[in-house]
Figure (cartoon, rainbow, N blue to C red):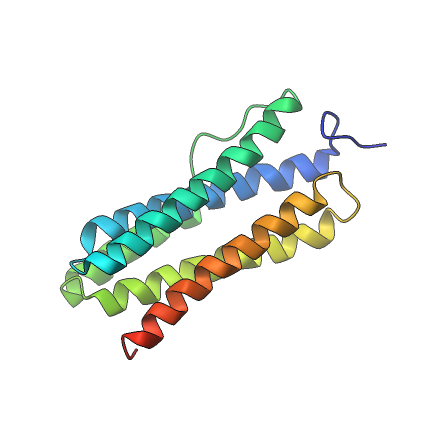
Amino acid sequence: MSTIFQLEKDTLAAMQELVRVLHDSQTALTDAAAKVECPQTARLFYDLATRRAQLEHELRQYIQLNDQQPPSSGTLTGEVQKLWMALRSSVSGGKTEFILADMERLEDYLIDEYKTLIPKTAGSPLSAVFNEQFVAVKRGRDEIREFRRQRGQ
């Protein structure tokens, strides 16, 4: 029987990957907040980055409870995404609407990671944690989507 101190290997591997993707999200949101000129958009991004860091920290604790070392960096996909966003920002002149679209797309990727993880870890002692985090991530993505809608994008 699996406990939070003895998680299945598959659950731990999935958590490791999710920590990397959360790290990517948090880093991208922080970078985007520093680039946008609109103070409301920057506030939204910094707030979401803080929330992603909290989710990452929570999962890191569970990984450590299982005598495992959490990852210290993001994913290769996250690095490619950073390059893409930097290129797009330089070409678009750093327009807020493009940055919002990129952040929404990145949050959609994070949501997809949770959608993949949740069925694989059904019955795990952390199922409730994953589901709560999934709801929080969706809420954040919806905030970006609503912000874009209000700006007429």
